[in-house]
Length: 267
Ligand SMILES: Nc1ncnc2c1ncn2[C@@H]1O[C@H](COP(=O)(O)OP(=O)(O)OP(=O)(O)O)[C@@H](O)[C@H]1O
Ligand SMILES: [Mg+2]
Picture 1 (cartoon, protein in one colour):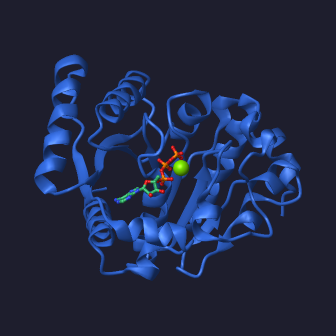
Picture 2 (tube, rainbow, N blue to C red):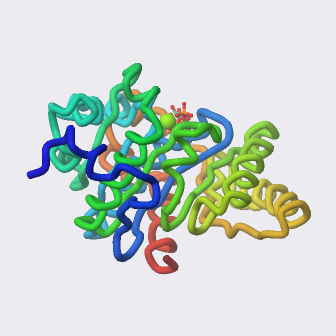
């Protein structure tokens, strides 16, 4: 097997980045932080596994990773081990008992937060190659539109942009969509409205975002789904357990499973 330290040499330029035959990476993004990206990414990957799919969850929030924290796991190998040349990306994929694999980050790891563009491209290429072993890969991104996020967003099959009903969250989601669409980064941008009291409220939030995209960007991102605010989410995060393990029948759990069913059918 190729040593991890060789990934940069193996993919020296952006033009040579390897792409899988069929793109199957779904990026989870937002403008504003704290809207539920990490929780949603975990639950989506778990929903995929429950549906019998081979799923990989990649913690792409390189500076402030917390997939491992939300699940209470301490993997032997993670992205920091890959960057340190101690493991390949494949070796860093740890099987979670929900039935899917996780490549965890390491919160506060300065090395990951400050990767050079070349190393980031190499990492992305390795991820695209590894993705061929899975039906779906979920990529949990950091908030905002800075360089790392844009680089990881590129060439994904779909990019789900999460917003809540807060005006700042909607405005920041719009800003993310604008940059992503203008630079033609992601395959298909879709919207997820999270933490709303009901379907109608979610549709109202989506409508606000849609009108701005239609008017100023001449483009209409579809609605991937609406997730209700549900105290079971907080409980499962507090217990460091996946929602689909702890509260499988909860409202938020069924909303995420419905989103996955629609995506799996449509993409
Ligand atoms: N549907 C929901 N119902 C209730 N609470 C929710 C829901 N979704 C998310 N939350 C709350 O939002 C908090 C933030 O979630 P999470 O850490 O996944 O956001 P994030 O977008 O990944 O944040 P960051 O931008 O910092 O990475 C969670 O700790 C949880 O309490
Ligand atoms: Mg997060």
